[in-house]
Length: 546
Image 1 (cartoon, rainbow, N blue to C red):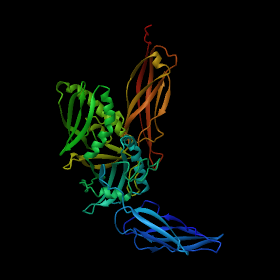
Image 2: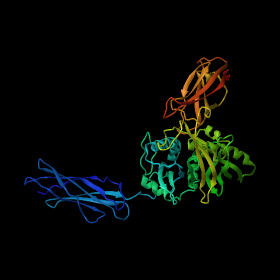
Image 3: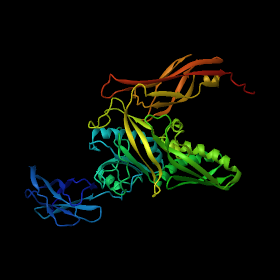
Image 4: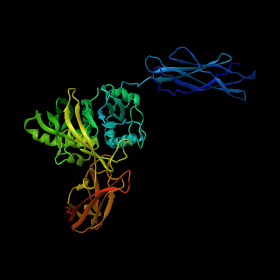
């Protein structure tokens, strides 16, 4: 009678584990052998081979012998010394009759694919006599907030078959020995190896520390100004990132253009030092008349009016355009520019009011991209590691020294920041929208629904303490949802009316209220409110011809 094969299970390493080159890793598991009518059987040896190298004794140890079944644990350490991924780990168990069984698992010594440079890179010099640990719980909480804010853009990129990964942080030192914190986001193909999302705290994937470090190493340190009263920074956005973002906006733009009978074939962007960004649109007008539009914007910085302390922000300091379709230029410009802004705002997950809030800082194609860069970032005084001293209500004021294009055709900016204390005199809230709403009886039955924009200044309300209410002819209320860093957005407001509403004008007061609580002392609060008068006018239903 032939002997039964031993049973073999490899628990470590799991298949496709990433290990370090020339560093030992554990190979362990268990094996068992069933006896025969002639008597018990034993496992004589368990060996491990990496890539067919010299066998290593895995030291099988008997842990159980019951009902003629002998079970052994085994374990040893092995290492990968070179060669291409993947590497094979072969485990062989042999019994006292010379019968063997083999199991094979694969390991990698690094990312399966080459890691490219970040799609967005920020180098930060804190200016504090502290070391920032990227794995500090408060830093991880900050990364969670950033991921939440990036969800709309991630969804848009996913529809194009792209993955938004990050942010990853890497603490290092530059060639001069200065501590630098590197911040990176990546836009990759779905096959790129990333650590999976961990919702709800981390809804986006991130790179492994090893892969992120490899990506950061492909980019030289950015020239960061010397810190003065707070961290200093430098920002780099490669041209390929701009093209990816335009590609994300393209489906919305093409669909809108097609409704006007226009075919949009391509959108491309180029950047030229020191500050020119040219976006080109190529397509055709009915009946099949080709056109090409190019819009060149010159980037720079300009002082922010009435800012205290004085600060400069990114700005469009000049623009020019060209087209190959002669006297229809005005029509095309009127069609395309609003659509570009709408499509980009949709892709970036920004409310239209965000672009409006930035209108005095920057306009044109780059506007929606930069609308997400507020001049101030209010935050909680326990959001950073305890080694960084903060006031009750801190805010980070960004003062840009340069914003344009570098010699490598990357969008590049640099500046310094100031950490300031906020108080009741510095915060504000405003609401904007229609003050007179008109509609016919059948439309207004039950109420009028209208969207309003809000703008915060230097205030980060508690999630449950940012709300709207209407009162007057009727009353209603609701909460206002905002992203972790949003200082502007929109909210739908309902002005309640009777189901059998009569003709006439109905007065309402729309109010918004926001409260921010100090994280270290809940007795301290900042508040802001805004009210506006709204009149709803109900008109007679139109006469329907018989």
